[in-house]
Length: 255
Image (cartoon, rainbow, N blue to C red; front, side, top):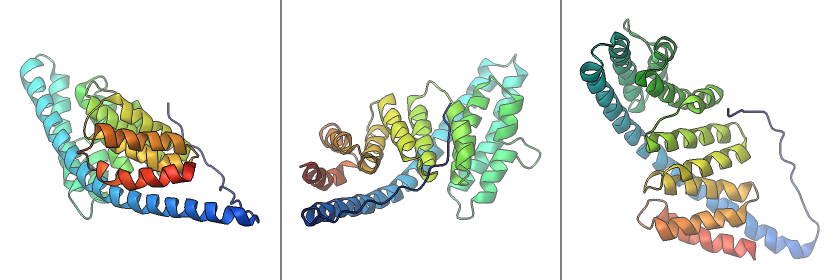
């Protein structure tokens, strides 16, 4: 299971050698450029991921509803779980598209209007498809509420045959670890997320996140390889628009 832990502050290192000044200056420029690029990418990712999550949620609930009311007529527990999930997922989708979203995420987690929230569904309908999806959605709700420890706990419990949701869950764990300051763990989860399924959305997205973070955790060569893979295999992805400059700078840094 994924774990989080406190980390001490990283000590700064200075040098009095004049011949290192130019190298340090170049390194600083690279980090500044990467940080700026990462910030712009994150803005796009947040907006685009919200749309994707909403679409996934609608599709997932529709599929579960079909299965619940047509294939599992003899299993009331399945039907009840789907019915409860519909309302919780509705609050989640409202939160995704709302400015004042915290209360809606909380309602999605804890329930409202006489309906269960994700936490109740997980507890009361263990083993159902609805409970599995509720586990994922609960993790994402906690992530958006900035409760990163609980986000990790629930997302780490999630497993599904859906490769896109699996990739997003691992990537979201990486996001949570990053917010907790555990950069090495975040890097590992981004790499894992990029490997789950080769596709135009999740693969370049998490390769790029791993590349940006890789420079900071002293894995510059690996970061460069990720950027070159995006350029070669996913030239039409959103991330590919930003890798050319980063590749040149990292190559300079490695010289």
